[in-house]
Image (cartoon, rainbow, N blue to C red; front, top):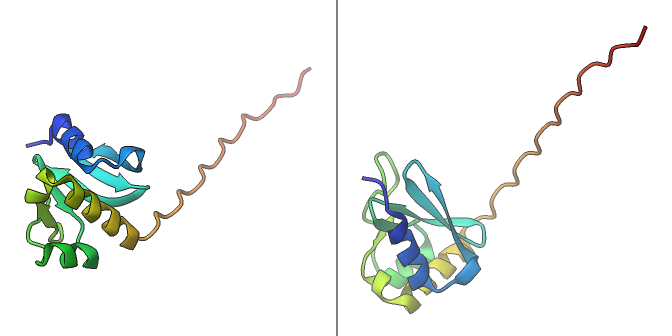
Length: 119
């Protein structure tokens, strides 16, 4: 089952991070970014936070669910969705621990067509 846009909108509204929280649709599901860093996934209308030490300390548990088959275990976020300060803290502190995204390689310019000489 694909994630509904309304679920992602709800997560964004609850997090109250404004433009710092963005998302991108991928294969019917969504990746959530805080200041350009992937911190969570919305899959099957559920929120999965990437495993990290900050989330482990805040939630006081180990990652417990996979957002999709063959994925590592993530923190499945349920109660925090209804607790905006907690959700915001989880997202901010997780983002602080995530590495900066790798810069995208510049696209090679298309080779201009060969000019033909005039006769």
